[in-house]
Image (cartoon, rainbow, N blue to C red; front, side, top):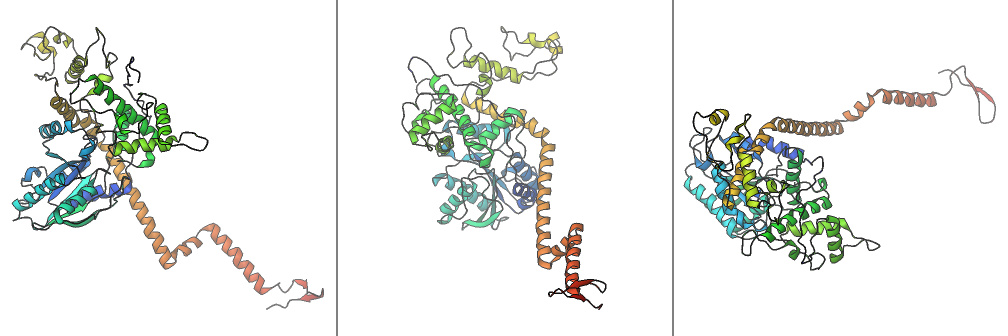
Length: 523
């Protein structure tokens, strides 16, 4: 990149009109059976992807746990379904080594504050984090050994978040044994409940692996498309639903934004990251930033030798290489979810990474957007409350005209200023904001989709059983004969066969091979 000009990344991504939805039949069957299976479990480990800490939450899993265990299962309290039985749920964010470390502590605080969830972060490439998880399971089993004989653990999560890999590591640190569960980079590899498998001897701990389950409904519009692309970038959705060049364009958009944010931060600031170009094979052209994915893939294809016949760039192979480098962590540690509400700033036409004199700073824009989101616009002329000379969080005087105009006002309003507050606000929005409302609105659609998927599975099973029955007892052939066109054709064949055997009738005359006239006697 030239030293005299600054690279300005594009601030908005153009999404397709429709986002892909993937919820195959085996997921619907598993969700239908999950509540019943949970009745026999003592602990649930829910795995999520640390690169998409909010997008990788599947609300239907929590609904199934609450439905089976009751609302008071958390923290080992006695649930109303089975008095005296203790249960526990661990939330583990896997692939810790691929996400930004600076978000870990703020996420722990925010999830406990807004959802009363204790979360852990795990790097399954090492042994220390799986040991910590196993210690929690052993401590829970030991504490409740009077009611738990053989502790049973069910591992849940979305596709390809690392459930099987985590179980193999738990077995390795607990039993000193090798890999047992199949692992794959392809989403949906596990299609049914597997196990039990022992991962600890004293106390005895058994684990079950489960198929990954996608949310039935991601939402609508650009927000849903954004979620689907983030899931696809982490290999959490079927490969064929998104082309590699589309994912490469979205990834380039995200990485360019992150690089620009890093460049504007002072040296030593936690927001600074190593430019993603350093994770690619060295090329001066690649270090010249661009927003055009075709230009970027052309430069990268030349560098790695991804050429087709005639010296043309193989864009599919180049895009696949770019995505693989990101998924392996070669480009650096990046969290794809917007945990700092930066998308609100980028949507403002006044935003600039390098504001000139007179333009608002990012801090001022952030405060302005945050206040607009938290303070709903009243139906009356209550905007006079927010005089620039008066702190916007100051409540109006009781019984004043301004107080009467405001229907609801809940001070004080805290504007996020540090990372902890920004992440807390992102988690609050997820559990209590628009995402929660969308989830409630979409409940009917989710139920319809699950019902339809369940019906499709039942139809396929009935068809398979019928075909097997027909093949076994020959009723398939008899059923075929019942068809009108088949009956007609069979009758014609039978008539021809009888005519051939019987020969011509008594009144019919014919010639033999010698040309002499013969009369066929009537039989």
